[in-house]
Length: 176
Image (cartoon, rainbow, N blue to C red; front, side, top):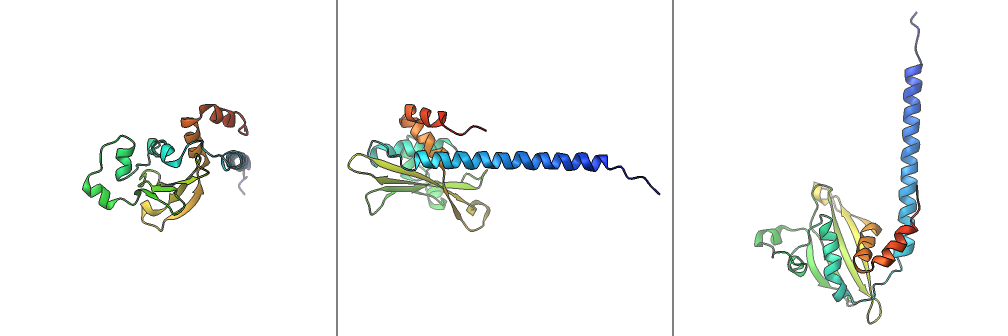
């Protein structure tokens, strides 16, 4: 009868348990950060009109690898799109909404299978609330799915126009 050595299984099991704990801790930290940023940025209103803020909002998402399309390329200082790329793009350039706001969608970042919808909603005569909404799935041929707001992208916009406020928000982020 062979003698079974349990040590490798025990070590492997302990390793898997440690990995699971680290994974759970990482998930909890990400959820805590998401909740914190939502609480701080959800009510945030930029002290400028949506039209004044819009080029910066587009530049932020474009700088993260999510290409803006159509006339928005020129709006942020890039070359105009060629005809073919404007025809086959899944995104769309800035449109006005019924409430006087603005909305645009980037095209796909193929490496991550994600794109963004950017929405600007007027708040009073000189304010704008912005949302970056993640859209996934369509780059791989599946049905597109709206995932929800990206608070980190919004924090990047705050940092671009109000570095002091962004710094205070980042200082208060949950650690761990």
